[in-house]
Length: 619
Image (cartoon, rainbow, N blue to C red; front, side, top):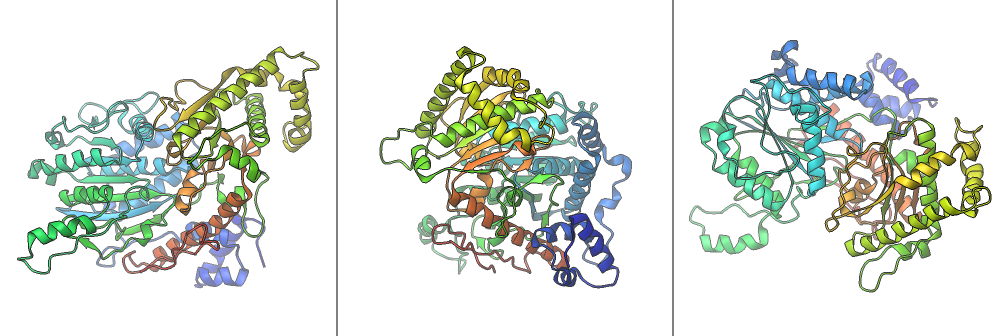
């Protein structure tokens, strides 16, 4: 027996649990679709935590309703200021509270907690940790320290978001709190962490905020800053350290210096051994910072936790101590309603999936993808022309639907090499100039490019869009005009000076060409068309590069992804690997055991020789 919809399955699961049977027997008896299992678990079996005495009374019960000052302000802004659906905000409220409950009470005299929160790519992780930060400050934490990626663009984007929703220093946003409750900002949108600000700033009861890049120079300064702080001031400052994209850079790819066997171990020998056994630098600095903090909760956030769950929980480094294994808790956030993820776009082995894929031939891919080693001469292939055509029509349809003030974005990601990206940017800009000329100067009635778009509209779009079946191409002409005039082609990498700033101009038509800066955290608002040829041998990297995941309300039917058959098959199998891992996390929480006690399995990828996702088990 199967269920026609997920809500039907959830309703049946609740009735099954009332008979005192477990969910696994429900899944087995009804042969429930594996893709639904995680969401059913979340809906019908919320985790109940207990303290060491077995009591289910949590420490957060000491916080009265009127004491949720910062959270209430954020809650009201999300609904009234951002126009979010109340059910979405209530979900953020519930899950931020559940995470806070797993953290230590900030009034405790000394603590170190390490946890992991798993979300979905482009699906509200920042909203969750913003809510967690507000609640943590209400509870008594006094410094919110966010490590936000390795690029300036992502750090700035995160800083602006938190200033808008927590501190009130960005407009539009929450109002600035009254005197005595205002935030002290250690960083701002223009300034990363600077050790010119003395650690004396830690004194006092006002909340502090720092958003820093997760890079070695910044973390070195930050570690030294904490180590130089007055011990009394430091011990009186409960700290929440949020590691955004916790599977990037934070993972130890080096070793761990062994503990000395004897108290009189030869120091020269130990120093010589350090070169071969020390942790990778970023990991070491994060551990050094945690070791310096007497009262700290470390919470990592990621959508691709493959590496995090495989950290050895028992290793210790002689100088910086324990690693970043989430020994205290792992929380899986629920799949947001209306989320567009791997399964929806790429399907799975059953062939399920939306009609969004358009395939690029190997010959075309070779013309736009380079691995270096020789001259690179890209050209505008037929598939790239088709992708640009889809982008023009998507922008026009969205304007027709009343979304003229919303950004419309196209992603072009073919290589990680910045010189090659620069050549592709020049190529695409020249092609748009050519199209603008054809559109503007050809005969309005018989122009070849206009007729080409007219035919394409009739064949590919008009009868496939529910609200557009009665609309002839002429209805779109003024909107295509607007898209043509306002297109901006941006080069987003560590070399070019282009910045992706959607707040500067509403309704922009953006073509974003880049590499690594587009592969982590950075949000491409209104992404409709993706031209994606970049390969990776790591599953987490590949998933993170898929900027097309997330919410696409109002233009779900306009999404197009141009890629190769090989990449599409990898994403389809990753849908299965991803769901398996999320089910593992739910089982861990249902067991009531700590992550330290139970290992997490990861399915092998079937083609691991060429795509080495070859993690098997665990501890």
